[in-house]
Amino acid sequence: MGARKSNGQERGTARRTLLGAAVLGAGGAALGLPGTASADGRHGGGGYRGLPRPAVIGHRGASGYRPEHTFGSYELALDLGADVVEAGDLVPTKDGHLVCRHEPEIGGTTDVAAHPEFAGRRTTKTLDGVPTTGWFTEDFTLAELKTLRAVERVPANRPHNTLYDGRWEIPTFEEVLRWQDEQTRKRGKQVWIYPETKHPTYFRALGLGLEERVAKLLRKYGKDRKDSPVILQSFEPSSIQRLDELVGNPLVVLLAAANTRPWDFVTAGDPRTVADLVTPEGLKWIASYAQGIGPTLDLVIPKDADGNLTSPTTLVADAHRAGLVLHPYTMRNENPFLPANFRKGAAPDAYGDPFGAFAVYFATGIDGVFTDNADTAVLARADFLRR
Image 1 (tube, rainbow, N blue to C red):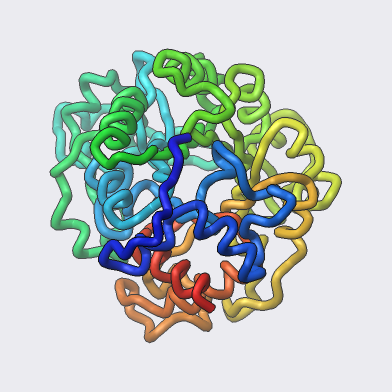
Image 2: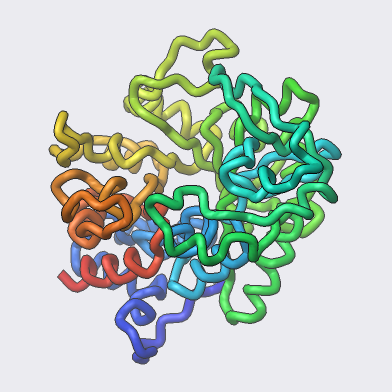
């Protein structure tokens, strides 16, 4: 990781003065803030633990403002102050390349439906037990995918983003690794990325194993070490365990709703649920091969039947006790994605009060957060650290 500078100079906005690790490390400890650097160094040092606390992670880039998983979205996230960019939900092509899409089904994130030459590729598959109809990356060569263009995934919530439909192509993971180096040189500071292996059990059954392909590319670009600026994540613990054998990168297990089971557990007959994994025993097991967890925000602060936030769980303290960092997901500005007590009106594309929600989540001591709106998160962090 490149050293983060904190020289105390004003750079035009409050957010930029608060991005330095020194401010969020020693300064945060002096303020007695939860989740910041402390005298024992648990949150300090180099590599991923040297990232600002709480870190702002651009979810699929700046997907609140641009179609997700495009270079337009990734670069805007950096422009808006994100510390890390989730550049890559990784899925394979028919010819074995890794590309960046939220899901292998691309009918909702590209203009594939407008390409008559691909009409015959539309099909129904069972994806992690769910029948899914559309077009799938594994049925296209990379050359074919490169003829498509990205579109806004949730136009009802983000109608303004449709202005950018058709502007960007689908990036490959190799292109992302090159882009990371270019942006690091251009911006004069280390750019971090946070790719995810998507549906690894599904793809391994198709002969398109993800982990080996990820590791090969990371090794090619010298980004496979414990201090490399690439954090790897997956909802399937076995994918993270496999990566732990292949690379030295920091690894994160993603956790969905408490009553769900990771798909690799389902196929292996493992009866454990996410609720089992967030117990002290389960967290200790995760810490034996990973460095962090990415829980849904509801595992940090549950909601009541009306969608309002209740009281925090012990997850943050339990995970920290196990030596794990927490990067929960996902904060968004629009009403439907916010807790009910932070909504304003009912319009699906209107903003609620994300600043209020950020303040509550930051107060739990989380180490970072995935967000579609990096600029909002950076300002919310500045507000929090000034308290």
